[in-house]
Length: 332
Image 1 (cartoon, helix red, strand yellow):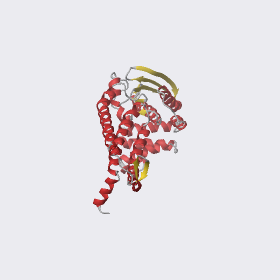
Image 2 (image 1 turned 90 degrees about the horizontal axis):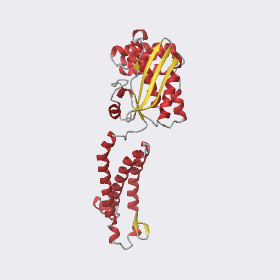
Image 3 (image 1 turned 60 degrees about the horizontal axis):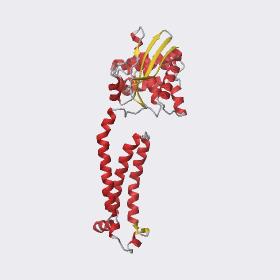
Image 4 (image 1 turned 180 degrees about the vertical axis):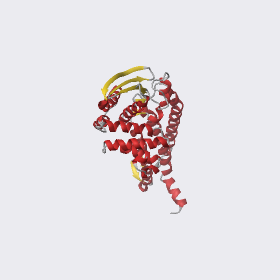
């Protein structure tokens, strides 16, 4: 078909009008869902679904505009609608729809643009959000820092399995100390409402874990507990902390999430301690520390060949230092 005739036909069939009207209405809908849905705590997947449906609907609307036309007698195929008398007032109605809808869209856009920064500075942070700050090592032996860091990591990992919670990564929290004086400032920097602070004291086969959950914006203590347990019970302690935090923040837990936060990755306490040491040196990221972590991960695997986390730790090292993959365990 001749391009000039095609464009003339598109105009005659009102395809241009439908495309413009659809684009304006779609923008209005996207402004509504991106600004109203979060306020109502509607999940992000619902926003993505609406936007996806809007995008899919665009070509469908154009096809319908090409094949059909809205007349006073209803929706008619274009060839039949051409035989009906046109009403000038009706033919211009789409212009008013576009203008009104466009005005509302622009208003919502600027409303969201100039009010969202102020909301983020106030109490509009997600209520079900949390950052786990580094745990203090209160053990007499400073070398036990690996254990305090490991407890923090595992609690954070278990909390991250709860989809209803916004959990800040370890990389974002490590620059802060365990019990800072400026909690509201830190909470705003991290974009969370709640902070979990803690300390770990390890002695022989005994461990004390002290944790407190704080609403950083109001400085209210939501929950606190001290656990005095044997090292073999550390997984149960971490699971209980994660579940209690989720319950306190009223996060919804599915059956699979309850299982995920209560799982015991190994029944061998020696393998677990070796893994924590390996992960401690892995987190430092220097070449020498990564080589040390390989040794600990290999020892953990030797103590428990089915310890999946130790195998994963070893793989993480090889990703950062691929050349280590070819060395013997005793040489790494």
